[in-house]
Length: 122
Image (cartoon, rainbow, N blue to C red; front, side, top):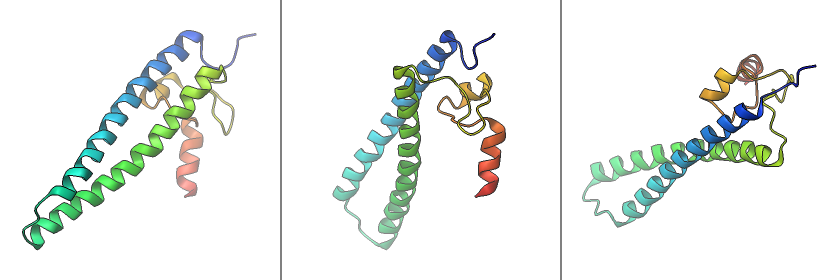
């Protein structure tokens, strides 16, 4: 009987993708934090300068929230890999998440059908 879930080789591939994505996100978060520090030092001369800086700040806050959520999902997947519990199975229906999907979104916890269901439920 064939083992369900990903092979050791594919788990290792997903781990490498997760680590690369984690590094990218941490870099983005570091850049945003640096921009926050420079924002407090800016000499905003008029309302237009203040409005532009505020708009950029709000955009960065939204990006930061999204990136932090993705980083948490990546860390959960990495912890599952480290503990040997990662198998590439959907957390909702227990079917295999396709390797193609995991290569695009290695921290995915749902197969595409369950993800679509969850998105439509919102």
